[in-house]
Structures are given as C-alpha cells and as structure tokens.
Image (cartoon, rainbow, N blue to C red; front, side):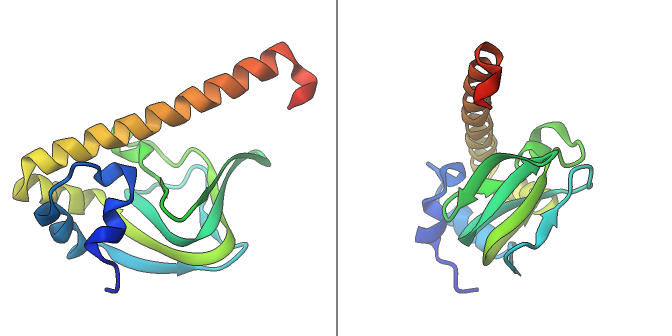
Length: 150
C-alpha cells in the first residue's frame, strides 16, 4: 500500500497503539486521492469513515466559513465514531493529496483483533475532538466579545 507503520504512528489517534494493531489496521484501510477544489464530504452526508491526510491539504467549511485547515499528519471524520450522525461540515481539498480511509466496519474488526488497541484509538479520538472543541470554544468566546473580529 506504500504507507508504513511509522507514518501512521505520527497521527495522534494512533498514539500508544501497538505495532501489531497498526499493522492490522494497515491491512484494512484504503488509499484515496483527491484533487484541489474537490468536495470530499458534504455537510449532511452519511458516512462511516475517518480520513488520515497523507499529503495535501483540506479545508473544513460550514456555511462558507472555514472552521479548520488540515494537512499531512491530521485526520477528519472522527466525530462519526462518537455520535454516528451525518457529516457536520463540508470537507474540500485545497491542495491535491492522498487520504488513508478507515471505516467503522474496519474498527470493529480491530475490536475483535485487539480490544485494548480499539479502546485506546477511541480514547485518542475523543482527545482529538476535545482539543478541537476547546479551540472552537476559544474562537467563539472571542467572537462573542468582539463580533467584528470574525
């Protein structure tokens, strides 16, 4: 697949996960290319995938507002693991690249293979979501105090 164990270990979601579990994950993921300006997800889409950016850049947008710009080493789509709701924002490629796709079905296979790794992935995922929520809360608070700064 041309993606190494070491590359995945650079993603926060795989922090502390055993090499054997990461190798198992590598056997189940798929690689997808995206173009600049390509819509990868639309707000409201159903989806069960977490996407790891191998290269390129994406923009997370809602109602024309950029919520985040993500690049190599970051992931998106992980909220679905927690709430199983439709996509909350648009994801658009801003610089062509490649994504590594992990589905919920593949995560359930990991749960059977290595329950401890599965739990650790979910904990790491929750931490990542929490970090993003803190950043968004800070932005919201600043905007609430100074609405013209937005």
